[in-house]
Image: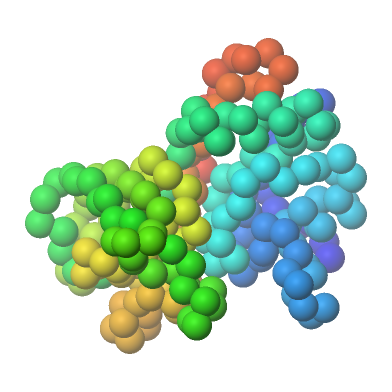
Length: 211
């Protein structure tokens, strides 16, 4: 598959920063018809050394960092594991958020009967924390900045839905009105801050949402 849909934001000998398009897996799925992915396209189109460090959902767009050697992969993985990487997302969520900012702390777990959905679980769920800040208010929705403290699968989608403000265009969690309010999931990884794996220089990348 072509690389044209993936924008290379930055590259050097140790890492790549890319802007992932929507409807593209970060890594290949298990099914034979689900092999097309960001890492596969990069590996086959000029970046055979690219290694996945973290993921974005199939529908989510935005910034991802990839390593280009084993040492960089180990160091970047450590930064994610120790929560040294700062990320913000832009989202459009249903309705009007009353406060200007807030924090969501609701434990989550995988929901096997409803794969690939996640669910809230106050007994067996893993800690999940999201900070949010209102950017602008519109007639039927609110534009928000989201900062995940933890990195649970679907965390931002589940947390906003739990508040009664699902992300527009979300096929897994949004009610029909919110689902039909946008042609795609309105969730974009906007900024990414981390330390260069070789030099430890602080790096910051930004990529505005296109919705």
